[in-house]
Length: 262
Length: 262
Image 1 (cartoon, chains in turn cyan, brown):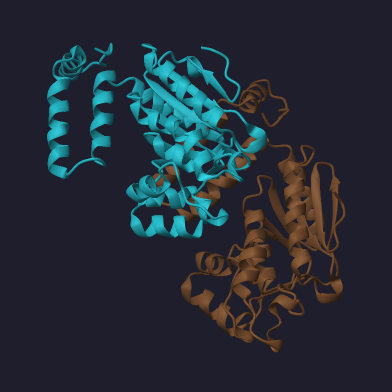
Image 2 (cartoon, helix red, strand yellow; image 1 turned 45 degrees about the vertical axis):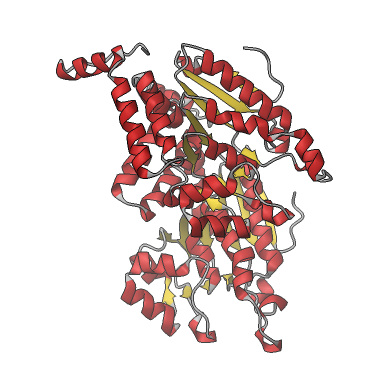
């Protein structure tokens, strides 16, 4: 993989051939999400998407911040036309194109764009010192990369309104209670415990994992009836994979399944 | 680093000693007093030569709580927002003790009253001089216990006894506080005793100390299932530490371990 300026990419994370780590690496600015950083994240994701060995991707920041928002310095004096021409959200629009599961491992601040980036991932695991929030309202604007939409879907209207209209932060435990976060672990253990979850998912049948991810995401896009229909098609589709045969055989033979991804 | 107005701060043999130094007002805390303690605890946590913290006070009192002469709480001249004082001063002070990664030992040399009692009880270990009076006092001026006191009293005494203590303003003596397990022990010289306990802690593995503190706080507030999970995360983390390796080697070789905090 090429050398990036704003992120660090590790394949074979903790010697596991199916797991890759993307670490946001602008520590001096609490990983502010500049246009360049987001371009690199997307480029790395697409490269890992194409890598047949990789089954699960972990996205993380550092101890102090997952990412503390967009690069305000980059846009304080921008006009709407600057924003249109900059088209910086085009990188964000590509995130849903990744079919492999992405786990956000969040320690410290996940604010504004940082919260939106975490929510763009499939699972959020948080260290107990993590803080989530959409503070845009405090500087006279509103979320622009999905904050009002994804947060509302994750935690419901009333809690989302409170967060978006006050700009106040949520603790990791509040976020877990509200349903934004899947699991809270001691901050020091975040990477290890995220790795444990990634390991479990990487041992599941990769095609089924992709079809399941797609089906869960469809829940936000369709009526229940259409979503159920979609799910059923994907369910049927798994039966065309060797891994489904292997999985069910292994279950009946009371042994561990060995999935190959087709 | 030692520019404190309201406290004295010194580091002796890996122990940071914080001494509240406003004896003329029975160590009541104004804004500066609280900010000084918070900042001292932060500095002690950042200082790699410090392994534990002792909090004590100059003069006859340990801490008599809010300095009522402080403009922000003086209700004789008009309404005041004490909620703001709690949010920006007392709660951060309690949080700084609770979230200190290094153990905070209170050497209670004299009376604790009001939020001063909250501060004393928020410490991890407490050594009291004999006959010291512990007073809630909030209801006597028309307020309710704050800075975590309601939580601590009810947990420790049960609802009925806690309510009696919280409402009627009758002091509890150190000997009774010991029976309720509010304090660790009574000593004629609480500071010496606290420093000696600190020396014992300083010889332990720092990661272990910090995780035991966190786990026990967690255990006090959560359900068994959650505690079991957390213990698993923490033990996996500690099991990978160099100090665990050193601890086991030293045990096998029948020598004293040399822990490095790694």
